[in-house]
Structures are given as C-alpha cells and as structure tokens.
Length: 158
Image (cartoon, rainbow, N blue to C red; front, top):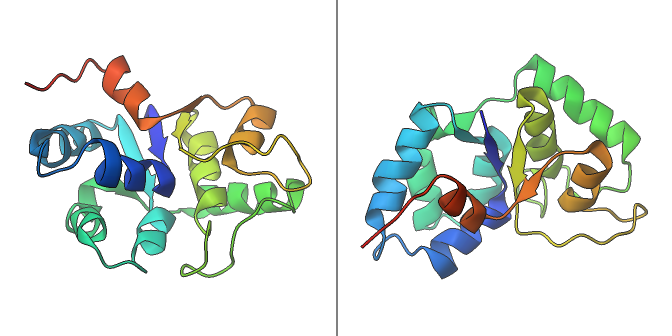
C-alpha cells in the first residue's frame, strides 16, 4: 500500500476538483484498479464517516467497499489506541457520525502499512489541538493531497 485516503481528500476531490461526471475513468476505473493493486485504500472508518451524508460519494465508496476499504483489524485497532493515548488532543469524535471520527484510523492504517496519508486537512501547528497533518509530521508519515497522487502516478485524462 502506498496511500491511505482521508475523508477530506475524497470529499474535495469528488466534489471540487475531479467531478466523476467529468472524469468518470478516474473514479470508476483508475481508483478501483489502484485499490485492486493494493496501491491505495481507505480505512473502514472513513466509509462510516461518509455515511452520514448518504450522497453519491458515499454510495460509490459503499459499492466499492470490498476493493476500496481496509477493515480495521486488531493490529490497526492497537495502533489507534496508541495514537489516542499519545495524542489525546487529536480532534476526533467517538462515534462514526461525529466530525473527524476517522482521523486516528487514517493515521493508524498509514502506520500499519508504512505509507503516505492523503488528506486535505490543514495543520494547526499546535500539538494541544492537532489534526492529521500535525500527528503525521510528528510520526514522520508522508502527507499528500489527492492531486499529488494523480501527478505521482501519472494519471492523465483527455
């Protein structure tokens, strides 16, 4: 695995930059193939976080769940616990319907696979109220934006 996608990256890419009606190949072929090839994934917690909107992005993720989502196994759960203990001020909710619920799962899944986090959250530069980029920086996890994946993998559309 090379990339773990956060909710913010998916939402921004789907709704703002890479509209699936304009670039269907990206979503319905390329992203699915990248997931099939174990190049990218989303933690199951991201799917739970997306569920509250019940929009097209959620429906696409749910229909692609078997390929796209990584279930939080015991190892990931242990890392989530460690992250929660080491970063108690990481802003995240405790139920899937709360904002930023998936954040520790995104980071833990990246630690588990040893790969980059794709997020559009902005760092707070304050460990008293960190977000994903702050914790990633502290753990020396590479952070990227969705556009970086497109560039890095050489995905082109005409």
